[in-house]
Length: 101
Image (cartoon, rainbow, N blue to C red; front, side):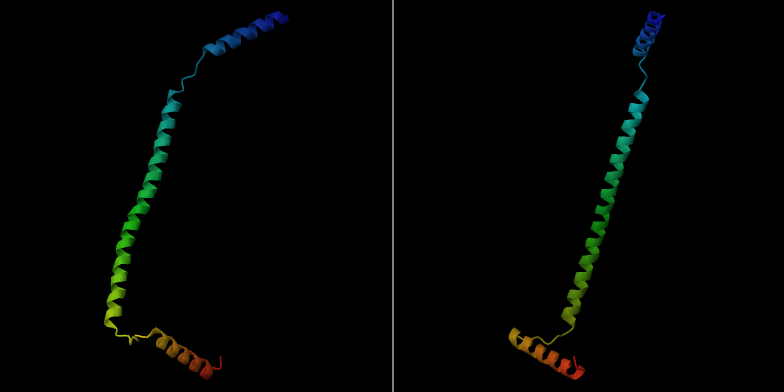
């Protein structure tokens, strides 16, 4: 009885080894998933690159506006930096004295 079970089991294993499941559909889906993920990552980086190009132009316009404003507003400038720093320290000292700080 034991030999009969072994023969049946061997026959079942031999039949199972002959049967090869068709995995082409799964392989096809794997390629599609891989390509979709690659495309998604590419679109993410291209979106950021697109925004970077837009922000560069906005920042350049802001720099030009600030440059024009600094040229229009005439700030009294001193040729001697030490004189300017000493004058600034005097103003700070007076402000601290008057505010009690």
